[in-house]
Image (cartoon, rainbow, N blue to C red; front, side, top):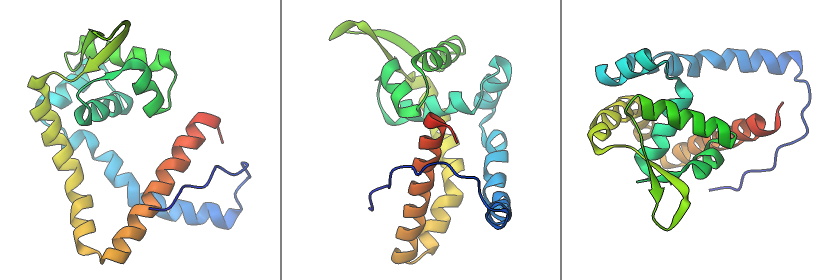
Length: 167
């Protein structure tokens, strides 16, 4: 995998560059617009009832992969302030989608985890959301797959850097 270059100084895109980007928006927009439609009913209802957003979903994605994380680590991984991460965790806790507990190794630290009862629902959602990407990756040659993944990785880094430093 190639190393991601540091963010460049922000510049105003040229009109031709803007047109090129806008031509690609429909390629990813459909994926993001379908998110709620791909949610298992229990997951969708929790989001609707508790006013949860994509940011809450991002917390759950991190907790699905990791058994537990501190609020500070969630904040760092998501590129949000500690207060924002804490607020997201509080919302998810009230909705019954995360549990908080004291870290036995450091009582000042709070660990957050996804309850075992919620994991199958989250796994179903992730499987539904991953299926199109996995089908595409399977259809590509190893070289094209590596290029596709490298491009997505660079884009994700750029978006994360942009969110933390501004345009």
